[in-house]
Length: 172
Image (cartoon, rainbow, N blue to C red; front, top):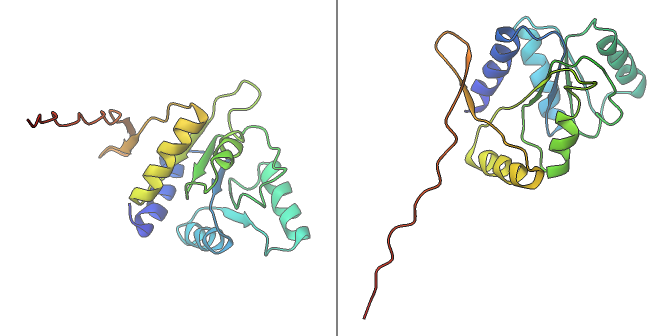
């Protein structure tokens, strides 16, 4: 979906699933800050951590999130090192990570200590879709496509079927 739809999709996902503690990952500091500003404008309680934010402010934001007083934390991969928070309901990959290993680290923030968690990747462009397919192959995870139904619920889509190669023509 286009960038404006990704913002709306993120907001809708958090509201529809009634998520109490969510981490949203972005690939850049600029996107991290922009998404935070947009979600706050949409009435959601969110804050972000990234490399341009002073360490003291990042630590305060992390404490607030860890204590359950901040429901949405937006972070870059670098700033997320050391995020050790139990009871994270959902990890949202707003941007598909550039490195395959980052995907594993990101989704590992939810579903800890035998609790259930959700990991969602919001795809915008074909390169993001191709990258997620590469990550699925690398990680050996079965990544299930879903979409929003008219009523706002999430519906699993059929995984894409491999295309059959056209029959080979024989030339003599």
